[in-house]
Amino acid sequence: MNAMLDAFWRSVAYCLHPKVIGLSLLPLLLVIGLIAGLGYFYMDPALAAVQSLLESSDLLNQLWAWLESIGAGKLKTVLVPLIVIALATPLIVVASLLVVATLMTPMIVRLVTQRRFPALERTGGASYLVSVLWGLSASLIALVLLLLSMPLWFVPPLVLVLPPLIWGWLTYRVLAFDALADHATTEERHTLMRRHRWWLLGMGIFTGYLGAAPSLVWSIGFVAVALAPVLVPLSIWLYTLIFAFSSLWFTHYCLAALQQLRLEQVAAAAQEPLPVADVLELP
Image (cartoon, rainbow, N blue to C red):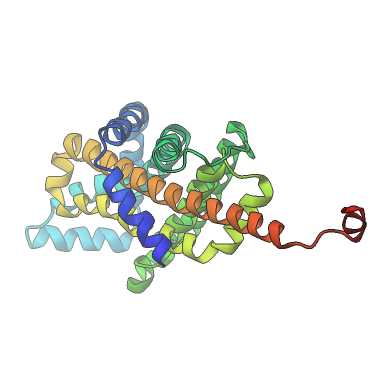
C-alpha cells in the first residue's frame, strides 16, 4: 500500500511538469485528426443508421408520439447524436490509450528513469514491436468484452462496475507491460506482474473510473451536442492527461518494484552457501 501511494503522489507531482503537459498535447492532436477524419466520412451514415434503427421499433415510435404530445418531441433529435457519441466513446478511449502507450509512455519512462532511477539497468526485455502487439491484443480483448457486456449496462449497478473493470484490466495490462519493457527481462516482468497483480489491477480500476470522468461532459444533453466541437477536444485532452497520469503511476510503481526485486536477488545471492568444491579449493 505504501509503495502504491508513494507512486501515486509522485505521479500527481509529475503531471505538473511542463514536459508531461506538452506530451499530453501530442496525442490530442493525433486523436483529434483521426476522429475528424472518421467523422467526416462516417458521421452522417452513423446518424442515419441509428435514426433508422430507432424508427423501426414500434415501441419507440409510441414513445416518440407520447413525447411529442407533451411537447418533448425534440428529444429524439438529441438522442440520436448522443447514442452515436456513446458508441464512439469506447473507441476514442482505446485510441487514446494506444497513442499514450506507444508515444507517451516511452518518453515518460525515460523521464522517470533519469530523475529517480538513473542506476537501474536496462535489459531490453521487450522490443517496441512486441509492446505494440501486446497493446493491440489487449485492446482487442477489451473491445470484445465491452461489446459483449453492453446489454448488461442497462442494469443500474453493473454499468458502474463492468466498464471501469474492463478499462482497469486493459490499463493494467498495457501500461504495466510498457513500464517494464525497457528495463525488465521477460522473467522479471512475469514475476512482477504475478507478484503485484492485484495491486496493479486495483490501480487500473481506479484509473478506469478516472477515465470515465470525461464522459460526464456529455450528460448535459442538447447543450453537449451543440458544443461538440469544443467538448470533443476537451474530453480527448482529459483522456490523454488521465492516461499520462496512469502511465506515470504505473512507471513509478513498476520500476520501484523492479529495483526492489533486484535488491532481493542480490541479497539472496550473497547469502547462498558456496558449493562444496569451491569450499575445498579455498586456501
